[in-house]
Length: 221
Ligand SMILES: NC(=O)c1ccc[n+]([C@@H]2O[C@H](COP(=O)([O-])OP(=O)(O)OC[C@H]3O[C@@H](n4cnc5c(N)ncnc54)[C@H](OP(=O)(O)O)[C@@H]3O)[C@@H](O)[C@H]2O)c1
Image 1: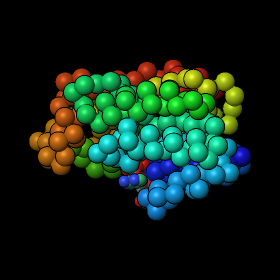
Image 2: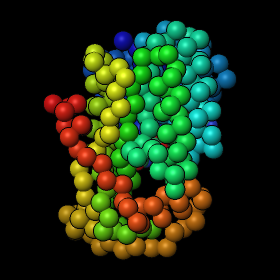
Image 3: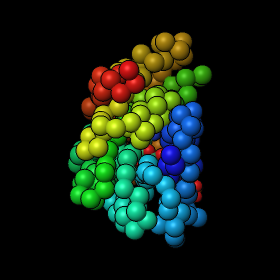
């Protein structure tokens, strides 16, 4: 089996590729250089895993282009890497994923959607944890290795067509993770890197991003 990983050179794509390779699947990471002739790049693949780059200015357009290329190339199976709670109108990049999910569901392809929680690997727990939101709100954190395994399951096993799965390894607050690691934690001001990140931090501050763990447990059983 051969699987194309669109946007596959980042940490997400590497985790999925590693899990696929461990199962004997030929994983083909694709990046910007492949985009001009994406249909040619995915030809011969049995399935595609679609990852949009972080904070893409128009994720629905990126996903629409990917779906069109897969259709042209005759790649019938697609798994779309979305996010937990995509329809959160306060977070523009989440809404881009909600709209992209709709495109995937109406693509005519055999689709599965994964909705990952915040990656555990976003937090470097070897030193003080400084986050621009409350350390006391709940998150469904996802270990990237678990993401890779879950992606490999839905790509290689039958029965996942038409499914949307929320994925989290564990539910915790940042303070709990800091205490476990024995490092201090404190809330810092929003660094103002990108307006969509500021919107996300404000949402996190109020609500966190809780995600249940049972779906992942069932997939990896
Ligand atoms: N971090 C989290 O906690 C979290 C949680 C849930 C979901 N997500 C989602 O995961 C995705 C990010 O994954 P990541 O951090 O692994 O990826 P990333 O590092 O942001 O993206 C890297 C890949 O995207 C390609 N790329 C960049 N700009 C592009 C463009 N304009 N057109 C086409 N391809 C382009 C890169 O190509 P080259 O190889 O050419 O460089 C590379 O292959 C985002 O959609 C994010 O919302 C993240």
